[in-house]
Length: 571
Image: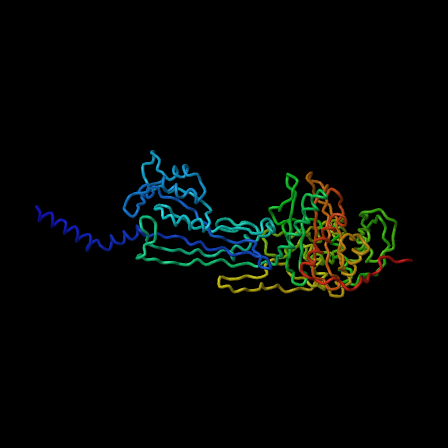
């Protein structure tokens, strides 16, 4: 019997060690081998000065294994048990993760109705690295972590609409969404052998595929200018009882966007980001700000000069019987082309437009960017509305001359003024100044080619005419102390809550300094209650934001005086 039993044991031992040895060893290794994902760090988003607007931080989800915790014991040097099980684990853990000890003990303990052990329970989420280090020092068998990457926004609500937000897997809005392919990295993984209590076996095999971080994005935004623009807009929206507003600050030479603020009134009467990028997604009739396009077209085609003479009545009837009138009652006046722009006369502008064939009117609106996306690095940009000439009715063919019957987003309207200030050259507005790859190599963004919209001579003349608007015309409240400013006011009807044209959009867009234009700032206020005119509602915000931006960027004050074209002529 002894020999038989010994032979059976020997045979079984041979089977286990020789015949099935490799197979069983592989199974054993598989049981103690685990793989953890190493989350890739999403690329940071910063402003032009390196200030963080969005970044990723490492966080942990901590969970417990009830089976391992139930068997866990802590002994002293003499082998005596000084603590054991879920209750002792909760006693040690509770103060570290700041939870109630009794509730934690209950969570870690197997309930009577459970038929099996090995239930995993989450005991803490969003745990920072220093807290996990403290948990690890406790060496509690059965406490594990899952590494996570969390997106944080150090600048709070500043530029929130532009930066957007990111979910657990991808960007959901703003630059987080539109630049998701660049910002996303590639997850890595580590495979290792661990002991029963979850620690890596020193003698075990460890293989690691490192995560590849996403590309860092340097935006063209200046956080201070962005914050100031948002604050000024908030204040003005409240003062005039408006529903929403937009402020854009753009570098004329590079077309970089320094600030893009969108704010709206909330139900409690406060203001906040709109949750969307209204500056590129929402359109409006630009109103009188579009008159600079009519003036540029008339000068460029040789139909008029800044000194061309017009007799401008309060009410004017076109050859097809359409009647137009100015915003304020006035006697029939002798005005130059400059005076028509300065005083923002609709009837005068219609007379100027009658010198231009309908197709030419359309062509210049198109040249200045209406009806086309700007191409900025944001999702959901609207093309605006520019109907073909054949779809224009008897009134629209004249309305487009002063910004009615056509719609643009705020960035399109702003960029049209940048064209005039940039000697007739158009470039593509952009928010990405450059990128930094995982190796730390910075690459400046490739700028798009500029295109000529009007000649330098025409642009210079229109710019000079625009200065009259601020010095002696409808935009006096847009003046900036120490700097020569050129701009244009705008007022346009808009659809109200009743579905009728019962609302208004008040705007002011301008550039400075006139002698060497550096910045264009636009202010669009929707549904103001205190007044409907851009010179009263929006121009003061322009003056505030432009003044701050010029000083922030150390742009020297003007040293020359305005040399204006005459606004009137005498018979």
